[in-house]
Amino acid sequence: MEPEDLDSEDKEILSWDINDVKLPQDVKKIDWFQEWPDSYEKYIYSSEDRSAQRHLSSWAMRNTNNHNSRILKKSCLGVVVCSRDCSAKEGRKIYLRPAICDKARQKQQRKLCPNCDGPLKLIPCRGHGGFPVTNFWRHEGRFIFFQSKGEHDHPKPETKMEAEARRTVKKVQGASSSVSLKLNRGPEAKSVPGEATSWGNLPFNWSFQESIHLPGGDGGPLTAGIPHQKSPNEFLFKSYGLGGAADLADPTSTVGPSELYEKCKVSNARIYGAGDLLQPPVSDYSDLQIWNKSAALGRNPLNDNGCPSYPFPQAGWSYDFSPPQNALDPLSQQIPVEPPSAKTGCLPLWPSPGPDLYEEKVHMEFNSYYPPTTCHSPQEDPFLFSYTSYPHHQYSLPGKSSKWNFDEEMRYMGLDHYNNEMLLNLSFKM
DNA sequence: TCCTGCGGGTGCG
DNA sequence: CGCACCCGCAGGA
Image 1 (cartoon, chains in turn yellow, purple, brown):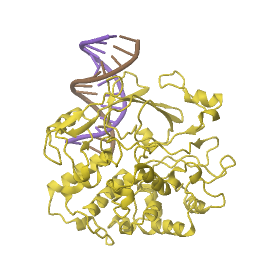
Image 2 (cartoon, helix red, strand yellow):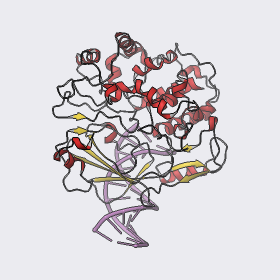
Image 3 (cartoon, rainbow, N blue to C red):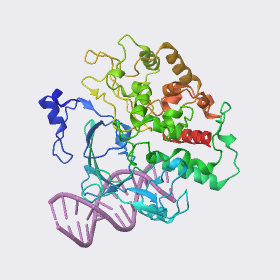
Image 4 (tube, rainbow, N blue to C red):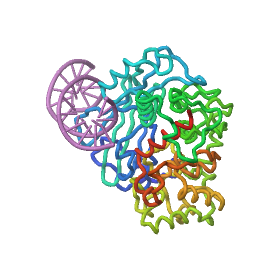
């Protein structure tokens, strides 16, 4: 949003503070959920945004009692690193997610580095005047107001899901090292040549996206040349094992951040709908086919399944179509959509998917098990599968998925399935 | 077992 | 008074 485009009303909406007695209610633009809010940022989410409802953040944020039941305050715990500063494969650093629970965190710090068995150490966050960065959440009417104070002065930890998946895998590994991975593979699953096959390799094959140091980078989180810090392709890399798209996914690739982002745009475009690139031709109604198909089922194909069910179209609401600064919550991020309107003159989502791509999408939606949500976040979107050309990952979830129909998938896709999916993908990486 | 939110309580500036 | 932080509790996954 350009400042000069702001009218006084917009300015008023932007000038709120989380502590204000009265927060703006005439909100015209709700924000994409920000997984990695940093600096002094404010966002207004829909009260139906599941990620916002859960006050999620990929930073390790713990609850802080501010003795104000109206405003939830959370403070950052920093990141757990290897005190030996060891490096995993491809020079990736170990940035673990601090446990939120105090006891669990103490326990965590007694554990050893999963890479080198060295002691772990917690780097506290001191990004807010020497104190941890704080996030504030406040539910007000149809909106959830978010405000962050401070700038994280440490690398990003694993995301919550990565940490959970790592724990899960570790548990599985400990419980039965002889369990055949075949149990987790669908009949169509194929191992990818060159992939490691040990569970023990897991974390270093996928979970340390934050330590990815692109050539020319500053060694910190991905920022240079990229307006957000975590591209969907990073997620694809770590969770979907898109090793086939080496130049996109491989953190050791010589592709620089800007180039990477340019390449990302292709697959991001549909989702983020950002800028000129993302404006689909008005004549392109292929997405509406999906919409209509699903409308027949009485649900919004783009945000159903426990994702915010925005009244769609929602008069008077729109989303900022600039790219989110952070990756979306893969869990439940709705895709902010705006119906075709005189205002934007464009359709909300993918830029210009041709018929073939559309067909592929439909095929995958109905015939393949795919990342379990129809909240098509960039990370999960089956469309990205088509773009990223990685057919190996069209597999079926044994048993359960075989009886799923479209409607059930819409209904049931959630974190658990997501995690299942992650594990399935992990198995491909190993 | 851990996450999350709540709230009582303490200490500091 | 605001803030950071400790602690325990409860509900949930």
